[in-house]
Image 1 (cartoon, rainbow, N blue to C red):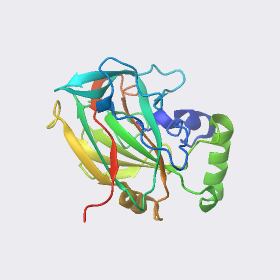
Image 2: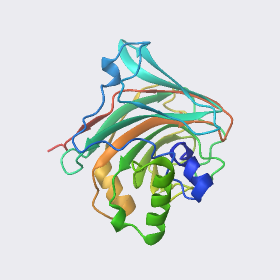
Image 3: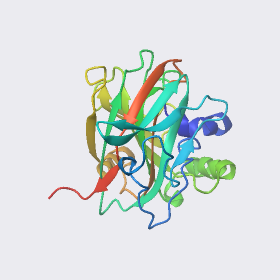
Image 4: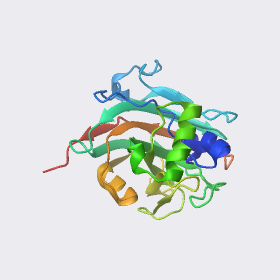
Length: 249
């Protein structure tokens, strides 16, 4: 799915930014919220986190659970959708490399990355960018301004969405079927690594440059989750800590 952040905008404006971009924009100096591994199993999420849901869609359930002695985020989806938003500020010129780990208990049989009706994923991670509005086309500026009238001035202007797909080749990427402001990139695919932790490391600045053809602006947040509301399936996903760092020398 890319609807988590975008369905509201698709319905209202036929574009696709509001749902994804419901993460409040972070102040220029905002740090990452407390990592999951530092939180208490069964306890509350960090107050800086945001639960992101879609109107009239059953929400996912989120919990902090133990996995081999480490606290991780568990996201359960049952014909539902939702994400946890982490607002923060990252300077892509200094720390453009993002690392995290994820695990799924299955892939979604009926998902199809190329269609709106199949736009569900066992796991997905959005990275949200603050592209200057003035640099966008008149059409995109208009859509985003309308989106901000509906959802507030915090609506960002672009995103990269990393997904665990069911059948696409790893590395396959395309625009969201809902909007050309979200580029979807397949990092894992199929059942080979199901029920195993997989660690990902991405130069998100390079991915942004390849997708949007411009220098990457600052990152203003990340949103992690899954969704199965289009395919009417069930999936459970676990996420470890999200970390940004400088490129290896």
